[in-house]
Image 1 (cartoon, rainbow, N blue to C red):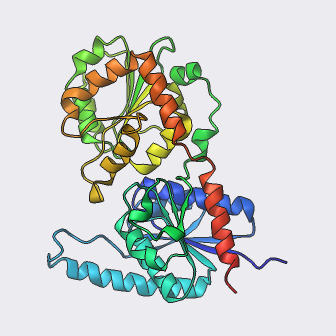
Image 2: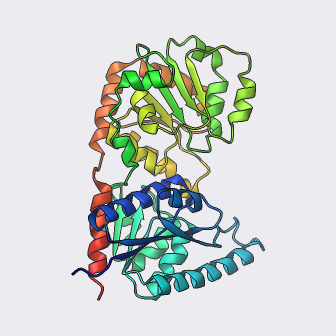
Image 3: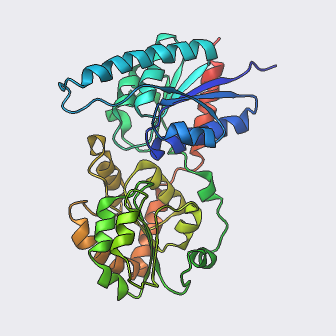
Length: 371
């Protein structure tokens, strides 16, 4: 009889870390229903809410990011919290007794996987971006395997540990069976008209929103229709600015629950360049204009966008230029069927399907390598 499988998964901070973590957990569970999986996250961050909703237990650490510049006095408290978090993580690991620990990036993974290394528990890292994050770069030396989504990651990690797996994505997106017509109707729009979807992540993206607000006349006269996810953070302000304006070709919402239908409805998507979103566009072959957020660590979203745009798999627009040119570019692109077709074909070539299952097999193999 097989020994009970016990797995720690750690990381988070953003949906881009949490979706892959939950996908890996689900894939491990599908292969080994007996598996006991425990998540370790950062207190007060998104994972503390999202992971239990996905059906998994999570323990929180009082860990947070350092302030820039590093010599700020406030960082003394951050460093003390890190030491406390590593001590707590060690305590959790000793009680849970995992055979393997998985890190997906984010603050919590640096403490949890650091603790796993000190207890000689094998570790697997999953790096979503084309430019490796600080937590994963620091942990790579002691990792057994490093699963990546882009070629050329030997710049950051030991080549012999790297496996090109792609990023696990939300399974519901791939399982969507709704037709484009029904998807468009579900947003109260007309299936006969071309549709542009704008998403800025769950909190929204100020630049994408500003690009819309600045060109409301262009939207009105475009002969197109728009599904605009403003993000919860900006929804009240945008509702105020749109007050009293009838716009039948504009569906404005703070958050879209069914992204599968939203993607199916869209002829073209405008999005930030987070790793999870990009993996989704690759797998569903969706033409996309990427506007990377400039406010992320090591400007990794720009590097993600360039990894696609240099291959003709996406259109890249700088954040600073978006308010002026984004909407006009989107209108020209969506009206050019040949351009849409080539974007779709090129982005599909970059898809790495079945990522979660490939990573789950590696996790289980690593667990079996411990005695």
